[in-house]
Amino acid sequence: MRVLFIGGTGFISTAVSRQAIAKGFELYLLNRGSTPAHLPGSHHLTADIHKVEGVRLALQGLEFDVVVDWIAYAPDDIERDLALFRGRVKQFVFISSASVYQKPPTHYLITESTPLYNPYWQYSREKIACEERLMQAYRDEGFPVTIVRPSLTYDPNFPIAIGGWGCYTLADRLKKGLPIIVHGDGSSLWVVTHADDFGRGFLGLLGNGQALGHAFHITSDEVLTWDQIYQTIAEALGVEAKIVHIPSEFIGRVLPQYEGGLLGDKTWSVVFDNSKIKAFVPGFQATIPFRDGIRRTLAWFAADEKRQHIDEAVQKEMDLILKAYEGRF
Ligand SMILES: NC(=O)c1ccc[n+]([C@@H]2O[C@H](COP(=O)([O-])OP(=O)(O)OC[C@H]3O[C@@H](n4cnc5c(N)ncnc54)[C@H](OP(=O)(O)O)[C@@H]3O)[C@@H](O)[C@H]2O)c1
Image (cartoon, rainbow, N blue to C red; front, side):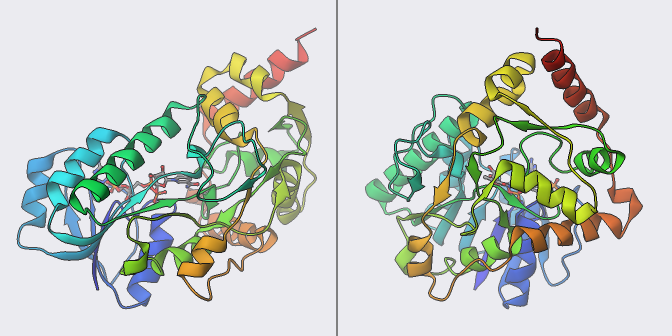
């Protein structure tokens, strides 16, 4: 199977690229070549996806069974993809987000038929608009779309709400005994998924004719509280987490850039029903518990000190929120 990943060297997609190569897929990665990734066995096409003429040139003479766009965020991206791949591909996979699901949820258990509605987060509304455009193309012209909605997926990044995503800042604070922030009272439920688990479910959808016109989430079945997520990271580092609980609304007032990701996503308890992906990809089951997966992430950071980047902007943000919260009375 000849597969094109637009992106393919990112946080989730690197692990999936690695698995696709190991599975024997003929994998092409289209990106700018600026994100370091060691993926021998793949073919590299250098282009900026926002510069369409360059993309057309890079794709000239190539046909793909499957195209996955890992980095489409707005309906304009989808129009571009439709123009590029209409009539040229057997399956087009759009990477959406589980944050598209109804907020606040009216039912704790999320299935793929949970309504798509997010009044809090523009990112999620744009993903919903992308999904809707693609489903319209599926109905009107038979465009062979499959939609995949990852939830918080990690390795080698930290699956957290506050404290830095692709950097080492949270681990550094924990090791130094500095306070860290957990939104809410830390008891709401959340699901984090190791990229290798995600990849095994995901690759089972590629070239799978039954998946056309369908949407899927692919997550772990392990449900944790937010306190447990941060405590598990601390435990793996051999330290105790000094957690300060702060309401999401308060954090959003201090730093509005956090409002969408909290009130539009991580504030609400989520539990995913994964029976659909298990039905379409027989044998799929996420197998990496967070206590093991996070140790792999920490080992990746430990293997090279240069990876342990401390993001000073994130440090400042955390200190600002903590100071504002301490001084609120
Ligand atoms: N991680 C999660 O927990 C999560 C949860 C929900 C949804 N998602 C969705 O998952 C997707 C992200 O996947 P990811 O983590 O693999 O991606 P990512 O970390 O954002 O990676 C970006 C990838 O895209 C390439 N890229 C960036 N800008 C580009 C451009 N202008 N032209 C061509 N290539 C470009 C990068 O390579 P170069 O820099 O070399 O170009 C790299 O390969 C997004 O759609 C996101 O909404 C993720």
